[in-house]
Length: 351
Ligand code: NAD
Ligand code: DAU
Image (tube, rainbow, N blue to C red; front, side):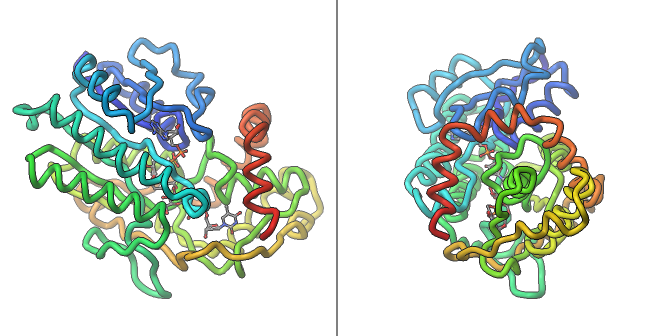
């Protein structure tokens, strides 16, 4: 094998797309998927590649320093692509400590294990940290986040991701580790856990259940198809200079309420419902605390320097996503059984 890469969080939504892409496109790389399999991690996301000779799965917690140090010593990876995280803003409001542990402590544990293993060979190794645009805070009606926008996180989730970004850069600046960071906007697509807006709405519309829209639905997000994010990670991993940061985004801003209406329209068509039928399910509920108004990414640096642009339109991606959820009812049933019901009731009962 030419390279051994530990990908953390590979059983999650974005991680599974990154693992799949690397396993398929780079037969000379050994991909080691390190994942704790929390509620968000699901090996069913990787069924199609789990028997490939260049893929291995290791179950483990990135917060556990002894375990991580032993794994690095045994595996001697050449690179880390770090996606493991607690990723849902609403859960961070209920339980911030989990986010500090995994997102901050877990990231530093990985950095330290990499530092111990890679001392003296930073020129042949790379730590790639996958982060979010939420670290920049919120925009008003104008402007976009660039790589030089100051950090101004508002939720416990974004504060924990901001902290982890700072640690990654500190390891580059202090120890000379080859580290890169990317900050991406909202992803959507297959294998997205239905606690997040798009898959939750698809699931509820399908079941004729209320579709909860926070506040007045006027918050704006910039949506990117997850496979385009995975491709951006591939390009940045291979081409970025050490110590650089890239913003990744879809140039695709949608008000939540307009997005949900578009989704209802697509679902009416796919489910053979009368036009306007699914829109009746839209229910305005109490707003999220500290809810950022608008995110918008300026990804021009990534385009100019590494040639990356999104490959499909939002309408096309959303239609593909709806088709995937309708064709994968077993996956959806599996992830929404058990604990999901309890989470849903606690999160939405009193809104
Ligand atoms: P996800 O919640 O779907 O998956 C997270 C994965 O991490 C799961 O497989 C989970 O089991 C694993 N994990 C959690 N805690 C762990 C621990 N302590 N040890 C080992 N594994 C653990 O998340 P996602 O939406 O795929 O996001 C992946 C990464 O991308 C995160 O770092 C997130 O901050 C970032 N990101 C997400 C988005 C988005 O729109 N979803 C956008 C930009 C950046
Ligand atoms: O911007 C990147 C971030 O996007 C990632 O870093 C996060 O990991 C990811 O979860 C996502 O965060 P958001 O908070 O933007 O995503 P979410 O799907 O939770 O919410 C999208 C918008 O929809 C947001 O304005 C809140 C709103 N919303 C969400 C849910 C779950 C609703 O109106 N109703 C809902 O039920």
